[in-house]
Image (cartoon, rainbow, N blue to C red; front, side):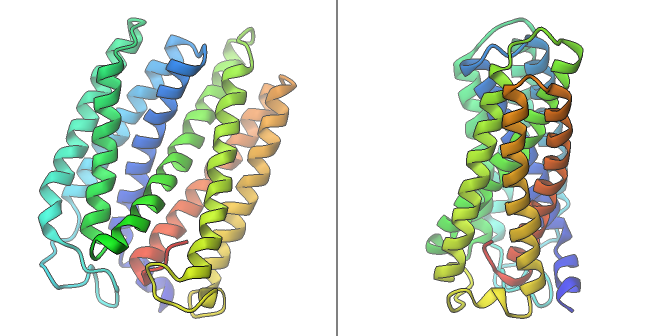
Length: 283
């Protein structure tokens, strides 16, 4: 029954994953462009991926189940969506995809275009904000949901972009290790933040109204522990190992570890989204 309730909300889980990949990947592109010496080819390719993910997120948004005010997302779901936020959220995703595509052209030509970069990340952030407002059940609950979705995006897109950068070293071995080390460190910091948020959500019952740490032993306990161990603790260890191997220029090892990280973090994002839309739990 619990797994079925998550399965009924897969359309929303799909939205979280695709939007996270789009916005998080583009955020990593901006870090690579303005803070490192990452190659033009890597930056343009990653930006193009972000644009593609953004387009897929827009398609996913337009295909979400039709909702009416006061009705839950699906049978048994505690989340009541506000359909008034659907059109502006879809517009924000479409704008993000188009702006990211335009920025890809700028990067391919060696440009910087900070204004265009800012508009693009603002559009992506706006889509996440509108999603939080539409599915948060009011401003007080939307704020922690905004934090959760934003950090999920940074982790999901960030690990994808970092893994792609690891590939660039396999074909361009003379690249300095600093860009990969920086992105891996930022990824480690984001996952560590997720662990801290998990503890905070569990201790306070924010969003779900449960007693402190009750979800760890309740009917959703299996998925909560899965999120903690497979989606948070394991990626934290793997991300730390990726930093160490990148620092010693063991780029094949670093890339292999980042591949594992992609799978673990993506799985954690799926479980976290499923728990929110299926049970109202922030993890």
